[in-house]
Structures are given as C-alpha cells and as structure tokens.
Image 1: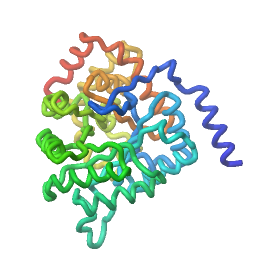
Image 2: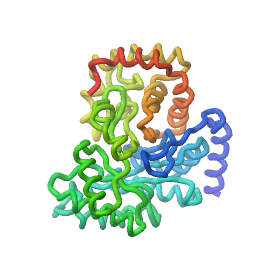
Image 3: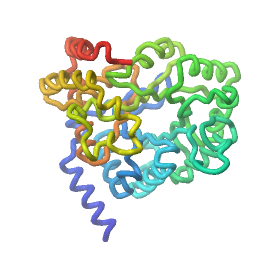
Image 4: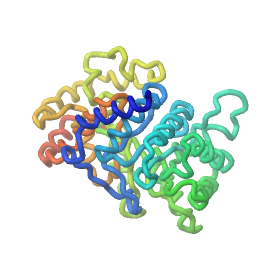
Length: 350
C-alpha cells in the first residue's frame, strides 16, 4: 500500500510538472566522445541522504527524467557513500532500462575518517581506486557507472599510476568513460598525453566549478584543450552555492545552505557585499526575461557551447521545476543581454 501511494503521488506530481514539450531538453555530446548528455543534469551533493531520502529521490528522479534529464551525478564522498546508496535504491524502484540514463561517481576523498587512513583517502593510487570503484558499484547496486572522475588531482601519486588504474576500470567494464574534476589544464593534458602514448583509455571530460563569478578556468585555462583533445565539461555550482539566487542579499537566512555548519566555509563568499550588489542588478534582467535569478544564472552557463551539461541540485520538486525553467530563458539571452551581464559582473569573476 505504501509503495502504491508513493507511485500515485509521483504520477500526480508529473501531471503538473514541466514536460519536455514545455521546456524542450537538448542534448550535447560529452566533448568529442559519442555519449550524449542532457543540457541540464541533476546532482546529489549536499542533498541526498542529508535532505533527500529514497522516497523523495524517487519523486525527484522520475520528474527529472520526465523533463528530459538523462544524466545524474554523484560521488563516493557525498554523505560518506550514502548518497550513492539513496540514488541506487531509487534507480531500483524506478526500474528504468539501464541504457536510458547516465550516472557518474567520483573518487579521491575516500570514506575512511578515523584510524589508519593511509591509502584510503586523499589519494589516487591504484590500490584505492580499484577498491573504490567496487565499493561504489555495490552501493549503487549497478554493474557499471557511465562516468567516473578523479575528484581532485593527487600530487603524491605518479600520474601514470592513476591513468592506468582509470583506464583499467574501463577495460574491466566497471566504467565506460573517465575524466577529472578541478584539475589544472596542464594536469589534464599530461594525463591525456600519457594515455595517448601508451594506448590507454583517455580522459574525456572535466568537472569544474563554473558560474558568473568563477570563469577563469573554463573560459581561459582550458581554452586550448577543447579543440586539441576534445575535452567535454560537466560543470557544477551554476548558482554559486545559492549566491546567484539572491537569497543572501540581506544576510544569512535560517535554513539555507550557507547556514549549515558543514557549509561554513562558504559563508564569506555568500555574504560578499560587492557580489550581492551585482546580483541585485541582475534581478531586472531576469524579470525582463520572465524568469528568476536562478534561472538566469543557469541559462547563462548553458550559453557556453563548451559545456556539455550543467549539473543542478534540488532538495525538493519545486526547486527542480524552477531550475528547468532556465531552458526557456536560454534562447532569450541575446548577445546584447550577455554583454550587459558581463558588464555587471566585470571585475568580480575569478
């Protein structure tokens, strides 16, 4: 009975949820790879397990897929592995054909937090990586993930060791593609070049932070890599952890992400007076286009043709619905409006 009630609730929600016809989802290739991912994707950082349980995840994933989203991002470290558990159980309940969705995970931070953590965290050595992929697959309840990322660079492990381990995951069928997250252009190029020389599976994607106030790496540092090696991008934090929604213009609201103790490191950025002043000036542009500040910020990221997919987050269906509204704004962002936005944020971007 409980399962039936949940299914009925999901169906009722989808009857009023934005459909593919209202907000037509587009798909982009992952750089030069053949895999196609939805322009907007759904990630689980902060929310899954902490704010979103399995029942809520089922509703969220069903609504996202109904709107055309086919890419769902995760990581071993999110909620110390429990985010993968929640998402995996939701996939099982939904019963989707495996070919119909793309799922990712990321390795580096590890799960060990106490005791002898050598070879168990903050590393990309072969021992850790080969055990990490097995652990993730067990938590997901899947026989493979589509994308696996090195969550940060590891200066203490020879890059050849890392590249060979990642390549072996693909050879063994445990992952289909691999990439990096928050690596420098030089590190990505070195990994790609090593794989090329030794006939290994090459990294095809990078997952960097990218939003109106964080642009240097995507727009300048990686510029040569897009054409030289066919690098794709799945970018995170399009809303700058909520700064670009405008919710922090009057301080730190109770219950917000910035108010969470685990997110204390974000507070100075979220309450930055100059950036919040710029956000206030962006509000009329969003209103002019018939959207919200959040939709404007997400739409702006989609305008970069080098971005394969923009990873969005949501802790409830209404947030997911609002994020999907960005698709309607993207086509309205003319070169003139993009120039206005650049002028308002000039000097504040890193």
